[in-house]
Length: 274
Image 1 (spheres, rainbow, N blue to C red):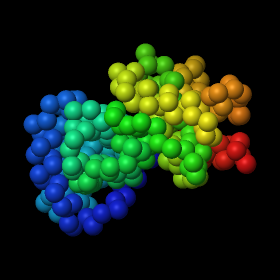
Image 2: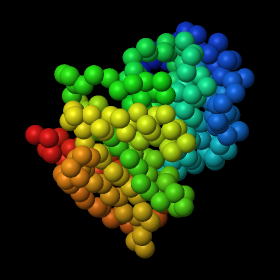
Image 3: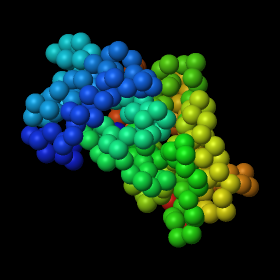
């Protein structure tokens, strides 16, 4: 989950950031809401001005989204949720209309400070927000010899339930971070409209290398919500592990609770292949 930590020098903006942001501002095919464009403009302007120490959930919530001085990012996840949407929009843009861009604007996992990065030539370049990997539209499945096990994560939260989907985004982010931290290659099933990436994922699942499918979901229940996960072999259909955890919550679940659940899931994935 985002923790306001940054791998960059807070006082020095990423080289090339201003140019790549200017190009994005007029780019066709970048699907961002107006308030997410304000979000992106704010963090870029602060970074360019050398005020990276202000690029935190609290200041974004107050200055961009109009929250009051009592805004608590731990209770109100608006910044994390909107950052997730921005990362997803950037990933989709660079996979599609902006695939030829030599330099890309990135919000790295764990930080809201934007950086400019050179596009990676590898067919397994990370293009998605939370350290997750989605194959680019023009990629062919890479040779599998010598590669570690891959885990394909699919979120199956009820799309008709906005609260469940918001919680599901946070849940997914934490799981991807935890599972990749265990040394697995992690891929996230893209939305149906990203057909090329979806076909690449299907091709990955059809390969003879070791691949596991991890389905995760958040569903609203009377007591609050239920977090579920199922780990299976996509070829045989054998279920390797499954669990459900109910939480009684007034609003959005505490970050520590989701992180702990994600860590438990990551260890279950490790145990399944041990």
